[in-house]
Image (cartoon, rainbow, N blue to C red; front, side, top):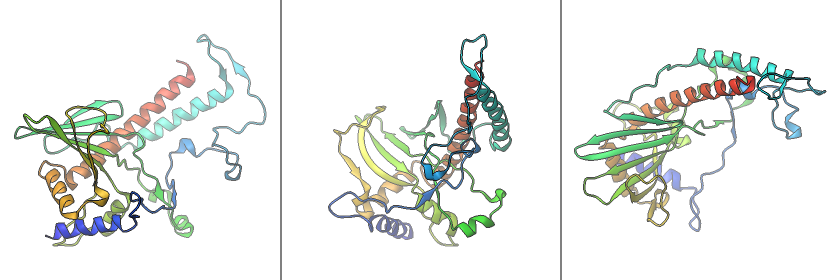
Length: 285
């Protein structure tokens, strides 16, 4: 009963700012990139100019150098390559997981670049979770400048990947799969981190269902011709049952926590690989 009330309160909070004549839109937040990787924090021509950050600010053309690969090389490329070498060393130094963490509950992991699938069979049912680590690092909420100045570098917020993910439940003999489009609401994650939950209190859900639909099993694309249930205007009791349906199949807060840990490790792994590929490209090896 407490869990139902807790979820009802969360739904009311999400819907309180919606307009009846249009889909619910979350109020705009003042967002800033509180933490950015150092590759983007190099010199630039100033925020007032509106120009994009540049790796080097030069007042004259840099000399070119030829090599056997037939590509253009400049002194700027050499400096860029040296920077990337240092950047890769630093990222590997702070890398928490050299290997990807394992999920509890018997989930099997399949990887295809930045896309990951978690597959589990349960009493004849097949549950498949699909997510992609691209664009999965949320921006940080802007903080009070005075408070920010008091923080040391060691207190900089940790980079955490919170990807959208799709849950596909397939039953034997069923023509279609029941598919859930889920995400990690930033406001609920913030409240969970700041307040936690006391003894005897039900913890809040750290993920939410955005849409539900029936789709053909294994289809990569969501067919717009199939009816899609949007949870923004959904009765809280039905939403509560949908969340319980997922929890009974192992998709609960524990799973969501482990998913974020796995996604964060995979995103950092892919980021380091990108830097290494970029370094090789710049060096023309």
